[in-house]
Amino acid sequence: MGSDSEAEKSSQKERKKITALAPIATPLAGKKLCKKTLKLVRKAAESKCLKRGVKEVVKSIRRGNKGLCIIAGNISPIDVITHVPILCEEAGIPYIYVPSKEDLATAGSTKRPTCCVLVLTKPTKGEMGEEEQEKLKSDYGQVVSDVTELTTSLY
Image (cartoon, rainbow, N blue to C red; front, side, top):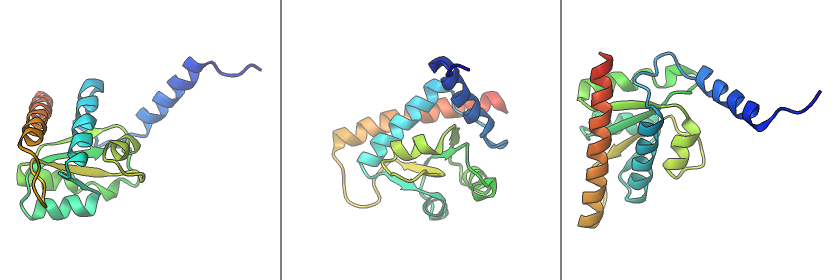
């Protein structure tokens, strides 16, 4: 009875992540797009252009704010987030699922796991530097184009 090797342990973790995904988690970001998306969330959190949590995201969408909605795919119970994609579609906001709520929280600079975030193009309060805003907009544009490309290939 030997101990599991590192490769076996990591493959077991991967299987757990995959089985824990919600059945409605489409379009799900691949590895590259997930990395780009989480990087965008990190930059948005630094420049205060981020709404965290279901309540804040829904309120922001209803008020007419535009952006990119990123939803965690391993939420339980699933009823917590089932209405968010519908709101996004009605408002014309692109959305994408990422596999892990923990990774989403880390990128959004919070300690608690986060169900969803909304990345805005400009901060709700105050101003930010023009260079910083241009960088955020270019990253935002690139991720949104990848998300729309993925969505159109699915439907």
